Amino acid sequence: MSDTKYTAPHMMLHWLIAVLVAIQIAFAGGMEAAFDAKFEGIEIGLGWSSGAIFHAILGASIGILMVWRLGLRLTTQIPPPPEAPRLIQTVSRMTHWLFYGLLIAMPFAGAAAWFIPSQIVGTAHAIASKLLIALIILHIAGAAYHQFIAGDRSVLRRMLAR
Ligand code: HEM
Ligand code: HEM
Image (cartoon, rainbow, N blue to C red; front, top):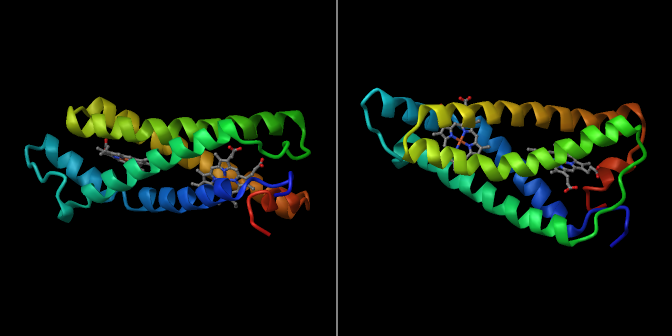
């Protein structure tokens, strides 16, 4: 494995989690509806029909995969950061660690909101999801900047097998 690339397990987890998170965000509506119904006295539950169970299982899976990935990140070598101004390097590092923090904490907050049940914790979970979306946009913009504007195609290749 070249020292200019992430390891294969890290890449596999990166792309798998990216797809699962995109699905989780796109299909959160069922969970939102079920959660609202709880507070209107219509208990539709974590039933298959509401889509809430899908959100709960997928969300918990993302959390577990992210813990696995964090373990990998802390115990294996990653390539040195790409050439970039100091500020960009700091923002990029912060974005990465916030991804780990959010994607591990969000399943707990979501579960707490559902089972307590608590509208305040639900709102915190929803706010975290907005922050997550902002970070994803920033992260993709960063990758696109390196690839298409700075012309440094080696950055995206760090996360690609070839
Ligand atoms: C990393 C994993 C997760 C992500 C990325 C995620 C993402 C989201 C998103 C995007 C929303 C819609 C927020 C909005 O616009 O109002 C949402 C709502 C919600 N999620 Fe999750 N979720 C995750 C895990 C979970 C888990 C495991 C549960 C619990 C079983 C859960 C319970 C809820 C609840 C109760 C709401 C409704 C909150 C409200 O409307 O105030 N989530 N989630
Ligand atoms: C939900 C979507 C995504 C999440 C949560 C995510 C998360 C992450 C995290 C946490 C890292 C840092 C890995 C580490 O050092 O531990 C990373 C690196 C990276 N991601 Fe993503 N990512 C997502 C989507 C994408 C997409 C769509 C692209 C490409 C357009 C991309 C390209 C990259 C690249 C090139 C790196 C390596 C950056 C470097 O070495 O400095 N990611 N991603």
